[in-house]
Image (cartoon, rainbow, N blue to C red; front, side, top):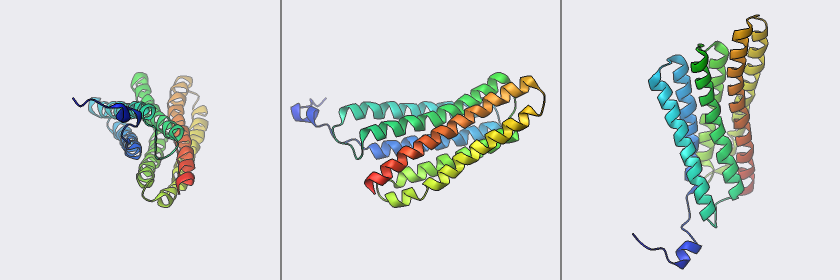
Length: 207
């Protein structure tokens, strides 16, 4: 194994942080799509796919944190890289939480859950597209931000309408179960919003 000299340790090779962010964004978008497939066909294979992508996204985040500690120079502020990665990770974690709750509560997906997941998937896919454009074409990347925010707002609107409809059913047990499930999707949308806020700040700085 090659021994690193003093200067190699002092100035480690530049890490490709944009590529790491792109990989995490792809794992996140693929994870939300996996959740959509699981809602349509609940079963161990689709559940395993989502759990695997969640671990993959988390491993990318943790690997990036290690690189941030070692790197002296980054393409943009290291705090922004860290915050973007953490918030993105929370999107897929919230989505996985929804699946685990539905398995534990033994309840099927309703129209509200399916609608929220479709909006979240669209937002996550657009986030992946935007992140992929960040370095080469930041102004093109910025064009996706309004659409991502629209997807976030759509999830939040579904949450409000779905919660209101739940209270009209009179079934306290089902109400409690689905309200918690809806809230997992709401949390995912909130973290999507935080992610795009940080992303927008990065675009403004480098454009």
